[in-house]
Amino acid sequence: QGSEGIIVHQVGHLFFLLSMVVLVFIITGRQLNRDKGWRMIQFSAILFVLWNLDTISAHFFDNQIGAVTVENLSLRQVKISAAAGSEFLVYFYHSLKLDHLFCVPALFLFYRGLTHILAREKAAREKNMETGDADL
Image: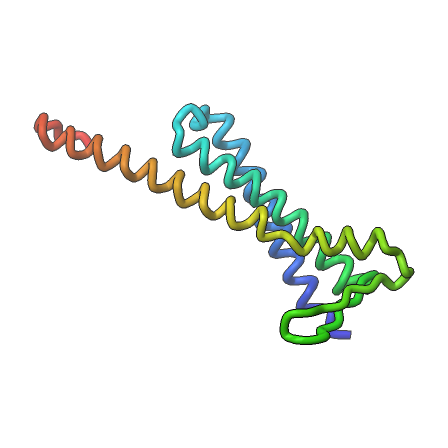
């Protein structure tokens, strides 16, 4: 029925989710989270885990089991209805569609973490250049 696309998409979310879980454990296991930059990346990975759980759930409700129907009424208005008429499911689905509240902070923390690590490495490299230390 053309469900292959959403299944592949969901597998992509699962792969990303598992990758972020592994990253959290690697950062913790190697005690990299003592550094501010790595700690930000770890928090970013946790938010990406939550984002993936959120989006997997939303895709499951609307695309896979059809429990929720989304109808475009206009450019700025949609109607969300539940197959079983459950008002709770409509509100729950609507809250799931606010996934950007996880994704945007995750991207920001990831960027800030990388920026912090890069600045620290650049400062260390400049210090090594000043002292004439060839080990970089």
